[in-house]
Image 1 (tube, rainbow, N blue to C red):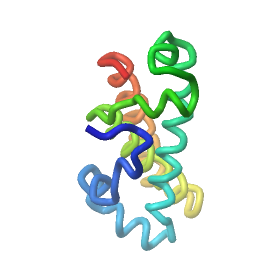
Image 2 (cartoon, one colour):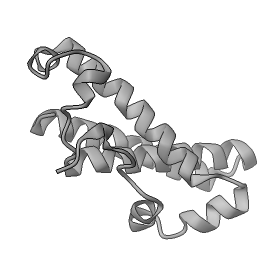
Image 3 (cartoon, one colour):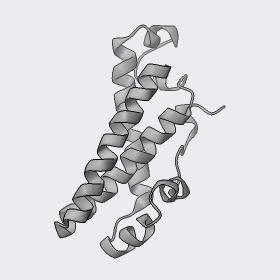
Length: 126
C-alpha cells in the first residue's frame, strides 16, 4: 500500500476514467493536466494536514502537518477526491478561459463530487 507522500497518486488515465473528453478539452483550452493533478494533490494534502491537526490522528502518527501525511494510506476515496479535484480545476480553467456554460456545469459537478469523496474519506477514516 502506498502512502500520500510516496509520489504521484492519480494519473491522466484516472481522469479519463471519469471524463473521456478531458484530453480534448485540455488540448483545446491549453490546460496542462499534469499540473492540475499536482495542484490537486497539493490542495488535498493541505486539507488532510488541517484535518489531522484537528484530530488526535496527528498525534497518533507521530507528528502534525507533513509528518502526518507520511502515514496517510492512499485509499479509493482519497484517490477519487484527488481525481475529482483535478477535474474541477481543469474545468474551472476551461470555463474561465471561454466562459462556456458547458464547462461551468462540469466544473460545478466535479467540485461537488470532490466534496462528496472528501466526505467519504472522513467517514471511512484517514
